[in-house]
Length: 153
Image: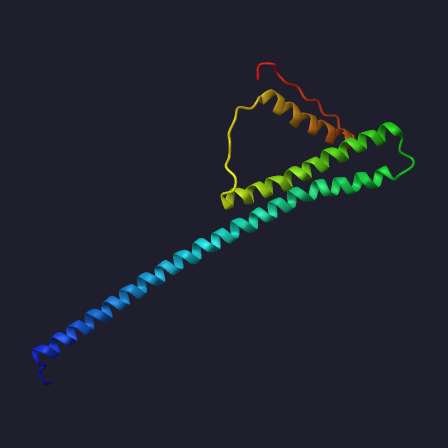
């Protein structure tokens, strides 16, 4: 085997070091790319889940609006029942509008165009609105629902 001159040996060591550095940089880059891909995949899944949940939440009020609109065209339904159906229609359309507004607010939050302002909420009035909505839906389905509350809330 031929002996290398000191200069050639130095070049060879330098070449090996450069190759080693390139291998390390490539490996580190591959790891970073894999992490970025994994992060992007989890974000895609979160967005997909969000869209599925929003679609599901919107399906119920849309179905209710369609059903009650069809019932309102039935001439056999009396005026009191028509008023109740109209109230439900309004309630479900407001619910649908609220869902759409929430989605738009979420998009504004993501873009930094909106910030959240937290405030105190009267729990008793919130619970009253929620229970009224459930009692109304139960009544429409001919289910007896009773909402009871304590004044201590």
